[in-house]
Image (cartoon, one colour):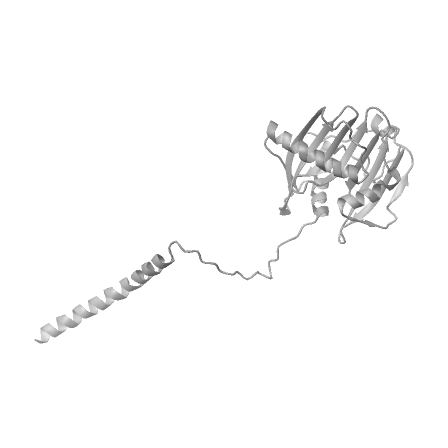
Length: 270
């Protein structure tokens, strides 16, 4: 009888041990079955020690400018070749943005459109020190019987950051004196009063680092310096103005050349 009690107690202990090992698994399986196929939302508290960084337009311009001056921290990727359908769609987007510039009095009327031809490439640039700041942009050239327009356009916002228009027929009819004000209205930055804004003599340049490079210098193929040629030798006026977003400043230049048949708007940093 005593042996039976000992055996019974031993079996009970064995069952208790087995149950303690199996019960959590059974409970977990039941919970999984209850949760399966259901959507559960949970609010996540923002981490105050890790706020997201907000980048401005001038941050983007800085990345593109650093590429232009061959900064070692800038990475540039030329995206896949644009298809014919992509180019057609992009042509419509570009033309609409150029019409916005026309409304801002920065371009002449494009009566015959820009139907002669267009070409462009898509790029992505970022700074290795700020890899989360990615700039997607197009370098475009559009033609008509009267004009050739080259420009750099933000692929995400469609904002044109710089442009050059050349007339092959007659001088451009533009409000040159107030171009810097019209550009302020378009680019969305405020003018900053400083001694830097000035007019240079004929044939001069508007920055301290030599001539401005061509617009397509942001492509991987254009690593050479910009030569002084006939396009700049006929310069009639070179104006520079500082623009700010309240925190940073970018210097925009307005160059008129070829007896007012060419206008180039571009930027630099001092």
